[in-house]
Amino acid sequence: MPKNGNSVPKWILLARKFFVYVVALDDAVRSVKKFRDRNPHSALKKYCSYVGQSIHDPDCRYRQHKQCRGKNISFSCICGAVKRPLTKNLSNRFVYKYGLSLRREVYEEFNPLKTRREAEDLEEALANALSRKDHAVWWG
Image 1 (cartoon, rainbow, N blue to C red):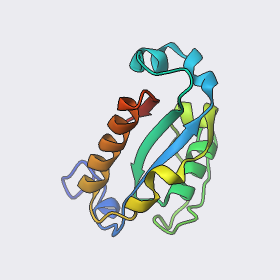
Image 2 (image 1 turned 90 degrees about the vertical axis):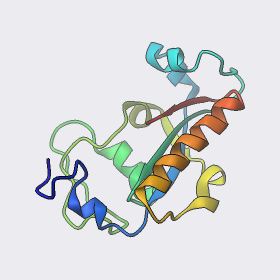
Image 3 (image 1 turned 135 degrees about the vertical axis):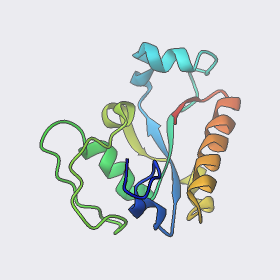
């Protein structure tokens, strides 16, 4: 736990902007039982998506998902949210393996957000909205 006593590192608490983002996933993700189990009612002709939130802008965060997995990670943030190289796994396994591109049309109008809470709430709302439209969604 960080020295400030919070479960969130101090540098995140000091961030001024937060973002939500949506990643289009390849339909092959439906072959993964865990993904299928979370999306039992999704329509096969609808998108598979990952919804996330971050202090990093969506382009930077997507690059982290695709590059920050495995051993010997050294990733330099392109959006300036973090000054030091990132060295740990920051990737969701579905985005790493099945991520195709950002679905900007779903989230762009909402960014940036002022607080972590706003980003978390919007992440959930976007995921639920996509699910209600029978899309297969992973988030959280």
